[in-house]
Amino acid sequence: MPKPPKSSVALAALKKAAGLSDEELAKAVGRSKRMVSHYLTGSREPGPATLDRYARAMGYDPGAAEPVIQGLERACRTADPPLSPVDPTQAERRGMARTAFQAGLAVADLAEEQMVRIVRGRRARQARRRADRLWKVLKRSSPRQRALLVEKAEEYQRWYVAERLCHESEKAASHRPSIALDLARLAVRAAELSPGEAGWKARLLGYCQAFLANALRVQGELQQAEEVFAQAEALWKSGAQADPGLLAEWRLPDLKASLRRAQRQFDDALILHDKALMLGPEAAGRILLKKATTLEQMEDANRAVEALREAAPFVVKQGDSNLLFALRFNWTAILCDLGRVQEAEALLPEVRRQAVELRHDGHLVRVQWLQGRIDAGLGRIDEAIAGLEQVGNDFATLGMAYDCALASVKLASLYLASGKASEAKELATWMERVFRDLKIQREAHVALALFWEALRMETATAELAERLFQYLIRARYDPGLRFEA
Image (cartoon, rainbow, N blue to C red; front, side):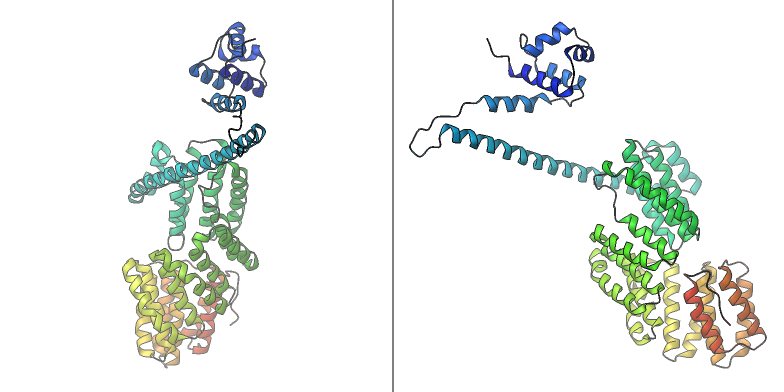
């Protein structure tokens, strides 16, 4: 009986693996059962095009029959007899062939995985370069125009645009909370409109929802942020199988740590910082900066300095100007809090240089604020007063209410310590007028109002001002904290 061609045997093997009958295969390919039987038995040899058409009909990729045919050819190969006394026997050759075949399959799998990683990486880089270009357009647009672009233009309805909007939202969170919220909501919308399988879309939406929760956090909407973050985590986990590592997994514990810090659940926040570090060692610098902030709010300034010291080499290596400024500014501010003003003064020139390079008004004013605190700490009272008078005005102009309050109270303490009661009284009038327009949390506002009244009644002291200043530092991150006058 003649042997059927290997292509027919391969086709029959694929049919059996798919669990199909001859009738079902014939119906799937739109051919008669008789024609299908010819191909399966080998009375008619199927060519490459026929094999591919039948493979697709059975749910396989084109070319699925080729490795089956190659395996059959190897299985049918006869081992060569030994030609010399030291040659392996035919049985040994068959064993070697099996081992070599298995090793070849393993190498093929590894090579395929490597090629897939290379293709994924190249396409991800290309996509993020497109996101750079599209973000330049969005950045110049009004919020309404941005929303229209994402809603109407398909090129903005892509995962890489959603990802970029998330990252821009986080950048804006510290100084433009309302813009951060707009961008996060836009990221969610871009993710909803983007093409993709259900699992991948769930993963992408979970990622974007985490940044939306972060934007709500900086708005002070902690309960809503908690609810949105729970949704984000559920979506993120449900789409885990669809994500080959395209979206940074460390971002979720990193953002959740900030939420836990805002909720004053510091132990949980520290655990999440460490989890983020484990998942994203490439982001160690920025994660350690956030950990330092958590420790600072725990009033553990010495450990915060240690975290900053640990972050320094990573931040320097990364070369991100904004992170470098944050590292050195926070370090200098914590040294001021610890009363180590001489060390702080040594760091200040570099902090000022970076603020100038970044051309950010808020950064420049904050540097002057540090200068005023250092001058006060080193007994340079006239210089401190002159600097803080300007800083308070600048913070008010920029709408930075809490910073304005801190600078004004520190200035009042210097006026009172220097016997300048009339200047302190004028400052109270100015502060009350300014804070009609600037929003500040309720308990802090109550404390400030009591202080203004004490200044007007000339019963305020430098000691009271300093206690209020220390209270404001703590209450910034603990809105419910009350001032005990």
